[in-house]
Amino acid sequence: MADADAVIRVEVAYARPDQQVILPVELPAGATLEQAIIQSHILEQFPELDLKIAKVGVFGKLGKLATTLRNGDRVEIYRPLIADPKAVRKQRAAEGKRMGKGGGLLEADNN
Image: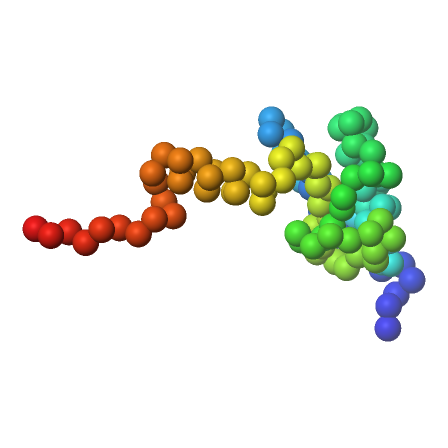
């Protein structure tokens, strides 16, 4: 049975290559990801963030702004990827084959 005056404590996290922040926030029980982000004032600290397009989640799992939080959750705001990780792996594999590295069978040592 939840108390109407219950408070939950969560963290709001965001990272750029040059700066990372984790901000503690207290909210009423039943609060959402969006409410936690707004209450943390992280949008003032990082004006480039746009909640209309930014991906958000809890503990590494994508979520929606309307997702209800639980005590102890870590709300995360994700930066857009600069490069597609699959494309980068394919490119590295192709470069390795051109250089004669990786992807081939090792010859048995006859010594």
